[in-house]
Structures are given as C-alpha cells and as structure tokens.
Length: 156
Image 1 (cartoon, helix red, strand yellow):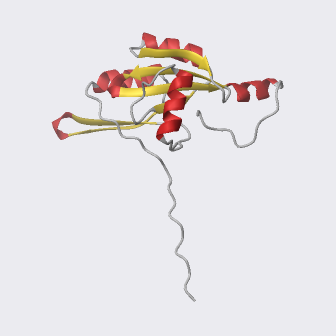
Image 2: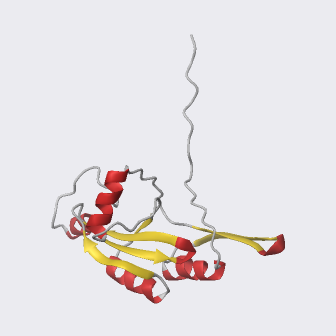
Image 3: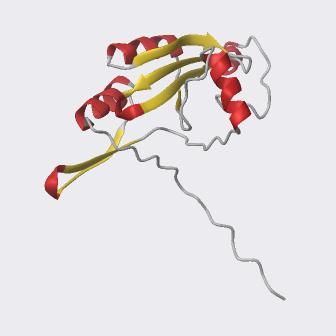
C-alpha cells in the first residue's frame, strides 16, 4: 500500500523588493510605517538587504474582476498594478498621514469599504502601490458594539 508524501509546509512568505533608493525605502518602511528590523546584511560591492518583520503574512489571489472592484471601492478608478501590498494597522487615518509626511503619495484617502475596513491607497518608495487598512469590525468587537463575523480576516 502506497503512502502519500507529507504536504509541503511553507514557514514564511517573504516579499523581496528592489529599491533604487535603499535609504529612503528603509526610512519609510522601518521608521515611518514601523516594521521592526529583523536583520540587515551588507556584502561586497555595496550590496545591502534589510529584512523587516511585517507580522502575519497572507497571499491574497484575486481575479481581474475582483481587482477592478477593489480599486473602484477604495479609489474610485483603476490605479493598482498587478501587485499591491496591504498593511493592516490600528489607525488607518494616522498611519496614512504619517506615511504621506514620510514621502508617500496619497492616491486615495482612508475610505470605509463594504467589507467594513478603513482603507487608504498610497504610492510608496521602491515603486510599491500599497493599501493601509484598519479592520473596523475588529475595533467594534473590542469595544463590544458588534458581533464578530467568522472567517473575515482579509483586507479585501
């Protein structure tokens, strides 16, 4: 009797982004957004990389219709490239203001979505198009004002 091999186990999702202006990207993502530094490596030829802890990682796959719908809800028009990085934060409005002050371009201000989160869109250093989102349902549940909906944990 043949046995099934064990399923592969993914231990980490790591998004690797080439940043022309490395210092500006570090200042933005580590210092302004607040991603803690896990490690930095410097090699010959001024090769540098910094690994930042972004908390829990998920991979969200969306078909083109879903991507268009999310852009319409959050921004009112099609703006996102094929890839967008989303960061859950405790206060979307304050974080958006802090990131704009740190050099991001605001594409759309914090907007309440039908999935009950407050989402803003920004063009960030290293050519990344990002969403900053605050789960309003989680805030309401902590405050004891609403019942939680099971299975809701994505920004979209």
